[in-house]
Length: 204
Image (cartoon, rainbow, N blue to C red; front, side, top):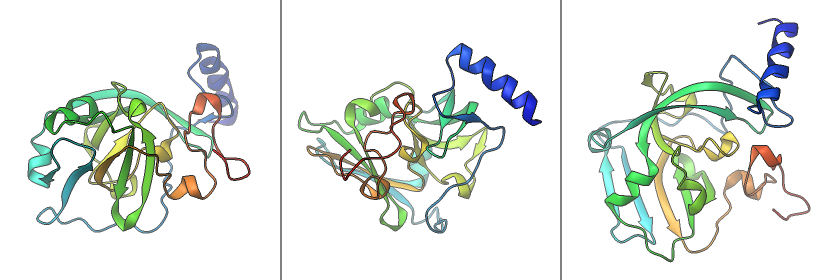
């Protein structure tokens, strides 16, 4: 798509209210990852939930693939100012997933734990939106390693760094625990419509 056509499309989608402020459309799927892609072995990979839950649980890759899924189409928005429209994902709906183990009333935050110790955080309330997935397919195929294979969170209403790649567990916590990018200057909430890109003077 040439520059003039892209600008014309951006004007149209802005008038439709789909493009957050400060964002530009892309037809590509940029790759932004801190560090190398982790290796994946389906025989040893597992996923766990822990913290303020009724029952701490683990799933093997085979068990995780057996969980009910849904497919959805959504727009995604990166803090680096690109947006991609009408992306198609498949995964386990978060609101259904938590029914498997139960969440205690004391749980107020969800901390995504990923390979290499990477974490990111969101309020439980934000994760309870009906478009939040534990996603492992994109556009009808398993995720590419560059985009988070085998599993990532998908939280469309937040900047895309909050959709954590290489997910290995979810911690349900009574207190907030800012993750890697949050403690390094990114906004703690990350709402693209509010342009919550970066924190100021150490505060979020």
